Amino acid sequence: MKLRPGVVVLLSVMILSACSPPLTVSQQVIATIREMEVRIENGELRSFMSHIAEDFNGQKGRLDYRQLRALVIYQLNRHQRLHAQLFPINVNETGEDTASAEFRALISGGPGWIPDQGQLYNFETLWQYRSGEWELISASWKPVL
Image 1 (cartoon, rainbow, N blue to C red):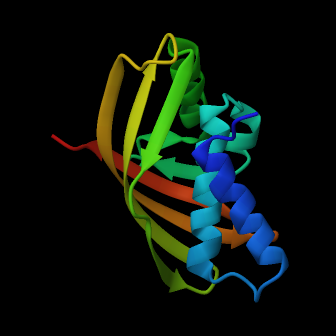
Image 2 (image 1 turned 30 degrees about the vertical axis):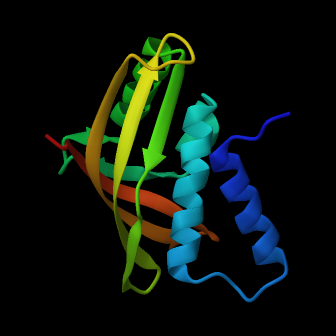
């Protein structure tokens, strides 16, 4: 059984966190983002959306939780296979129990194993620590030309 790179990263973080000091805010947010990456690539809508706050605000107020869920469903139905390649994730603590994360993501998809579409995006995200988990409360993205 071959493990996908995202799964390997997630398992590594889990193993290391079990036998090392508590993860920093940056490490926790990155682990959450990486888990979301694995979930979307596996087509696991419910698990992916479990990291999105119900009061989510996307694209500067033009997208709420329900609309984001519909967009994800559309993309999962449109492409048999989605893949996200995330580039360095920069996390900054913005207050008590809040953080921001910026990164680039190459999102690709297609009907089979070889993607026939792809686009590079810049992401700006805001996170809040609620009930023992980091939740995505805001996100904006735009294509890199």
